[in-house]
Amino acid sequence: MNRSMWAWTFGLVVASTAAAVEPGTSPALRPLALGAVERLEGDRGLFGVFVPTRFGGVLTVSASSGAVGPIEGPDGRTTASGEDVGADAPGWYTFEVVGAEPGAEVSAAFVQEGRSARKPWNFYYWPTKADSIHEPWAEGNGVVDVTAVMGDDVLAAPPGAAIEPGRDIVRAGPNGLLETHVPPGDTSTWFPNLFDAATFQGADGQVFETPCPLLKYDMLFGTPSRAWEAEHDQSQGEARWLGHCLGGAVASIMLNEPVPSPESGLTSDELKGLWAELGEDATNHRIGEHVVDIPAGPPVPGPDPCDPFVAPVHRLLEDKLVGLGRPLLGNLRAFPPRGTTGEVWNHGVGRFTASYSGVAGRDPRIVRVDVEIEANSGSSLNGEGDEPRVARYAYTLAYDRDGRVDLARPDACDWIAVDGDALFAPLNLMEVEATRWVGRNPYVTEANVRSIDLANGGGGGVPPRYVPQPPRVPIAAIPPAEPSRGGLMRWLGRR
Image (cartoon, rainbow, N blue to C red; front, top):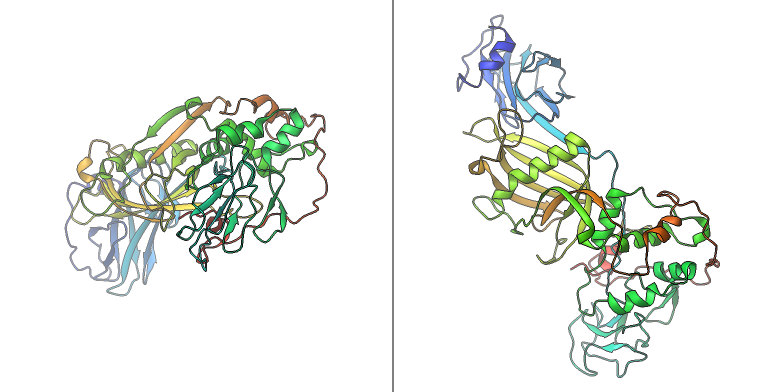
């Protein structure tokens, strides 16, 4: 029997152990599970490795001594160790090890990568919470030191009352601008939002230049969009995660990375913010294939509510990112270490890597998959927070005979764990087929925003009604809110 014929029948008749092979004789055929290690009993051995997926991946076989020959696939094609086996070729792959020391270790690893043709660009989520005065996160006196508010600011805690670290004391009112001075004992936080003014005064009195997307937009187009946003879309609670991550994520998937016309006076971050506003209405997005309403978990080994979603999630990843090169929209839920299940963090998912392992005692089509999902940053502002969000999931699932994830084998599915930048299973993964760029703010229009975006149809011919001046004050830095955290994540209070 030649090796191709053996590969066809290997799944039907497999010896659990191989007989010892004397030097110079033909070796017995031995199965080698992905991620497992087998030992040679002679100086050579012939092995078979089962690759369950039709979407390809890199198969690497190695031996602690001796030489590894070519790998022959189920279709008779040969590849070298460390090469991609190619698409549409699930099945048994055979190879021979020769010239090895007795007892040499032989192993096989299979890693698949899916990548979108266009990488989703980073964005900022532009929270709907305005600037606030609050109790310091550390070394505060535990007392509300504000005695009165100014302008239309809102008092969130009574003067002189005891207060916990980080809790709000004064919030901006309907005009969206914090007008109350910060007394000794309290502090303030700048929340970069769409309705910001051009400057922010810190607790020590220093004034900083700040991004102000809608203020600049109004100067260009003669609209009251900043005032409308502050009055109608400003959140008044403690939550710091509420914002425009849906619009930002959808824009990062559907559009070229924005390039503002020089005449506009906007930065790239500010222009992305305008697109985020236009894309924030979920009813305007046409969704294709999707997996939604996944329980948060977190998943654990053994039966739990996340398990039925394993097969559709991984099938969507393979079909779209590997098969078609299309990015996905995903609500990956809260960040570690103290996020909650109700938080929404939408991202563009443009890449994943999957490492496969066999499951002892099970059909070779049932595998463990350790997945690393790379999503774009939703916290990118002023050159900070550009690191991708990397969520890691581990689960078992089954493939069908055609090499696609088998949706009819729930018995094989176990969502085992989450790790990395994830506390929970994602709420959803979705394909966005098209969108209508109409946000909640009636004064921000696609035509206006597109006209000042050189990367998405704009010609740069907008009348320069807004003429930026050289900065007279420092660019607003991102002060620490929690001493144990760093950079933008810490300052925004993702807790």
